Amino acid sequence: MKLLIRNLPRTATEAELRALFAEHGAVQSCSLVIDKETGASKGFGFVEMPKPGEAKAAIKLLNGLDMAGSKIRVKKAEAKPGGGSDA
Image (cartoon, rainbow, N blue to C red; front, side):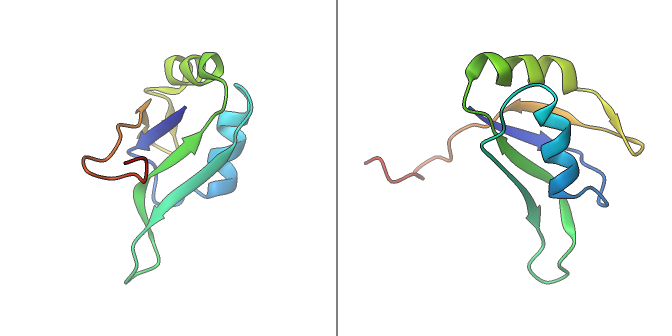
């Protein structure tokens, strides 16, 4: 299950994000969204967890968590409209 994590502190790293979610289950992938021009984090990212039960537990436990002064928001990532290569 792919999760969207918003309101991340700009100083957060992929390693920190992966470690945070790994406490709640297996993490398949983890990526921060980076501004192409500045190279700085845009304050959100994605974590993919292969087991839906673990992903749901992570959402429940981590949504609203204070991370370096920012209350992060965690939810299931929605598929992009018109995106994807399934068609």
